[in-house]
Length: 246
Image (cartoon, rainbow, N blue to C red; front, side, top):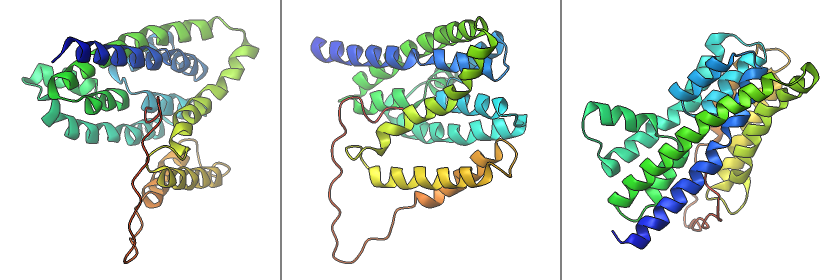
């Protein structure tokens, strides 16, 4: 492992980690808007540490949904981390129960992308650890800052925080809908199917049910179509800089 490759891996991992970790401020503000105390927001970031699930949980609670609906929404979004873990085990090869548990806690979109993008196993481990540590520390620190900052705002300003959760999800989703993203056609079909179901159920279903129902639509919409005889699929374009992360 050359020093140049090691430096490049650390630079990418820490750079991405800081960029993603700063986003924890938005979660802290959203948690405060949903009625959670600062310590509750902190506990979620420390123990859950998976942004999409955290936003889903506080989003359902903030809309008046029940705890089971909020937990169900968070679990549905968190299931993808299990798939990531299956892919990362043969690459990272964590040994011992404590190491495996710590590694599993840091399996998220960004650390998976960093590890899989590394050219060899040693650099993959370095990227995973450096990226995971940076994101974890920054995310938790900014969660506190966001929650405390939101708590210090007036009632009128705090009411505007209701837009934080949908804006956050849109920011995560938008890069995946661009033509340069691999599989963008499927991503757009999935997004449209989930949005239609959620919007249709919003006036009649309790908060949180829309997310659960939309997940079923997402599975159906995301199924790959059958290939036509004699047809050859074009290769996926390479993602642009900064794309492919969530």
